[in-house]
Every structure is written in structure tokens, then in C-alpha cells.
Amino acid sequence: DVLSPPPGSPLWLPDFLFGAGTAAYQIEGGVAEGGRVPTIWDTFCARPGAVRNGESGVVACDHYHRWQDDIDLVASLGLDAYRLSVAWSRVMRPDGSPNAAGLDFYERILDRLAHHGIRAFVTLYHWDLPQHLQDRGGWLNRDTASRLADFADVASRRLGDRVAAWATVNEPWCAAWLGHGSGVHAPGLADVRYAVEAMHHLLLGHGLATAALRANGAAQVGLVTNVTAVSADSQSPEDRQAARLAGACWNHWVLDPLLLGTYPEALQELWPGVSPSVRDGDMALISTPMDYIGINYYFRANVRSDGAHGYADKGLDRVERTVMGWEVYPAGLRDLLIGFKGRYPALPPVHITENGMASDDDTVVDGRVDDAQRVRYLQRHLVAIGQAMRAGVDVRGYFAWSLLDNFEWVEGYAKRFGIVHVDYATQQRTPKDSALALKALMAARRKVSGRFS
Ligand code: PNW
Image (tube, rainbow, N blue to C red; front, side, top):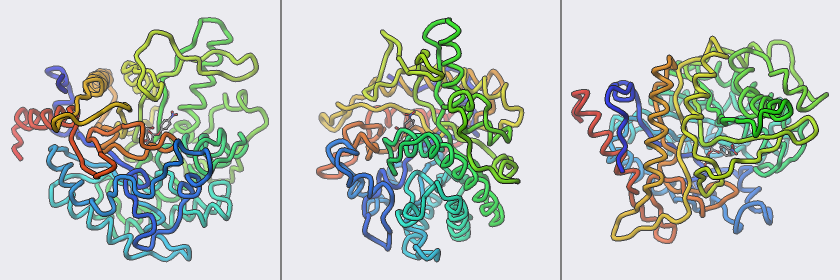
């Protein structure tokens, strides 16, 4: 199996970026080093039953010590770009002053990327809120939004000249809903009212951080959001209504405030009487035009009415699924992108900042990892992106999730999203067939565009 966009696909254009992504808590380890302070994920992982097998990011991929080899690995694949996150807990001290050791760590990484000519896409908040801020209410406290802006200011002052694109927040939906509504992610709170309030403060934090980044001359500023394709289980009015509400919750709850300056009205049908504490000027700040939007896409949900005013994800029979239980549905990405272009006149250029699949049986045999299902998954999504581009959507880049097998949050280490296999006993990295296919694609693109490395 190979990765190769169809001949003539816009993905062959030399300006289109290919990369891979990671996030600090999922790969770094080194949790007590360099002045790092505890985060809500350190706390959550210590809660019995919260994470599979009681696992945590204490060691993870030991990237804190192996960062140089890992960046050299990105270079060896020939990728144009690398997406990482900067840990708030390494960079900011509890008193609000910068932590030099943390900034030094990321500066070395960014310098190494620059040395290889790899563009750095840097996320500020990939879910690892310092615990001391959680102790003061976390995202339920409006003040946390200003603390994110402080972090953005410190990070961009020191690192900004080496960053091609900043993302303020990764997946507000996951942070708000999984963290405060369903409670399956840190900080483990479970109340719709909390989720709605947390979302508002995350988005406000995005707006304030955007201003701080721009004040320091940031090149590109955006936000990364996860989107879900939605189908109705039947054509009944109830199921179609359920699909409408699911789309409002999963996609428009984040995108409408950012791109229209309003929360979707459907949320009032879903959660009657629940609304965030919006102050004058908040929505204008949240809808500050972005330089790009990062879209993370994994799967489609098939929903039916739950009998009340909500929806239930029922799933479809006889479809391909990954070990996450997520349906493989590449056309969903194409249809969502085209739909967003229609719904949002102000849709900025798009980067697909995450796409990929988990497996649980990748093993190294004679130095090779056969992950043919992942190669096909990536290939089919590349085709879908090309189709969306031909339909007029301005997509500028594609990042496979993830560079490395890593700490998959509540799923622990059993679910492997990497294009590179990690043997956690030895910390040995082995590029899977998917990484080699991406490498071959990078080489082929360079030939086509006449750009020789
Ligand atoms: C994203 N959902 O999480 C995160 O950005 C990554 O850190 C993570 O490793 C990756 O996707 C794979 O899970 C998501 O339920 C978690 O829709 C849950 C959902 C979507 C994305």
C-alpha cells in the first residue's frame, strides 16, 4: 500500500504542507523536571479508575530526554512541518513569571526544527492546565482565560520568531465537554452547566491569547477544533432533529462563536435554560479573524433521537471501525469541509491538524511494522481532502496524528495512533509502514515540484 494523491490532485502542489503532530503531555514524560508544575492530567491519572490500567504520562515516550532524536526522525521522513504543543506547566511558574528552563527546552526543539528546515506549528493549550489554576476554578473561572493570554505572551516573546503558526487551544469541545460535561477527561467534572461555562472561557482565552500573540508579531494565529461527521439513523423527523442537535453540539458550538460571533441557537433546544456568562465584548473578541483554522477529523457518528430533546450515537452496522470504535468515513471530512465553506463566509484557510487511526496490535517484526489499515486510512482521507479543495475549500496542510505512539489519554498506551511505533520497555522508535509511505510521498512530491532537498 502506498500514499499517493491522485495525479493532478492539489495535494501535489508544492505549497501544500505535510506534517505529523504530537502533544506535550502525551509524549514528554519528565513530569518533575525543569521546574514543571503538576497539571490536571497528572492529578486525573492518579484517580483510581480514571485511566485504563492506571497509566499516566509520567514517562510516556520520554521525549523530554529524546527530543533531538525525535526531531531528527521527523526530518528523516522528509516532512515539511511538525505540530507540537508547549506545556503551560513548564513555561509559567505559579506566580506568573516565566520559567527559563521550560522556555529553553522548547527553544532547543524549535532550533532543531529550524536546522532541518521544518516548519513548527505550536499549540499552546493541549489540555494540560496547571493544577494550581484548577485549584482556583480552572476553566470555570473567567480569570483562566487571562492566564492563557499571559502564557501566550511569554511563549511568543521568546519563541515567536521560530514558529510558523500558533494554535491557541486544541479541541475546545473535548476540553469543555469531555472535561466538564461527561467528565471522562480531566478535570473530571460532569455537569452540562460547567461544560457550557468552560467552553466560553476557553474561547475567550483563545481571543485574548490571539491578541497577545499578535502583539508580539506572531506569524499565523488560529485555533484547532475537532469535528465529527453526523448522519441520522433514519429519515424520521425525530432522528433528523437529533442529527441537527448533534451537529450543533459537536461542530457548531465551537465554530459558530469563532466564525459568526454567536452560539448556535440549537444549543438552547439541547440544554434549555443553560447559557454561559457572556459579557459585553466577549463575542467580538472570540470572533477575531483567524489566519487559519485547524481541523481535526477522525470519524462519523450515526445518531437517533433519545426520546427526549437530545440524541444518542447509535453507530452503523457493517462499517469499518478502528479499535477506538470509530467509524472510518473519509467522505465525512470532504462533506464537512464543503459544508463549513457554505455556513461560514469568513472561513479562513484550513489546515487538517489531526487525522489518523489507532490500532492495538502493531508489532515490530524483523524491524518492520505492517500497518496497512493505517496506510489505507490516510490515503483515503488525502483523497477526500483533494475533493474538498476542488470544490473550493482552501486547505493548506495535512498533519497525521500522531508522529509517535503515545499516551492516548484515558485509553492509556494500548491504543497506538503513531506512524512510528514506540516500544515502551526500551523507548525504541520504529517507523511503521505508514511512516515509510509518507516518506515516499514526500520524496515523490519533491521530484514533481522540482524542489530537491
Ligand atoms: C484528539 N471524540 O482527541 C486529541 O487532540 C489528541 O490529543 C488525541 O490523541 C487524538 O485526538 C486521538 O484521540 C480526541 O470523542 C478525543 O470525538 C476524543 C474525540 C475527538 C478527539
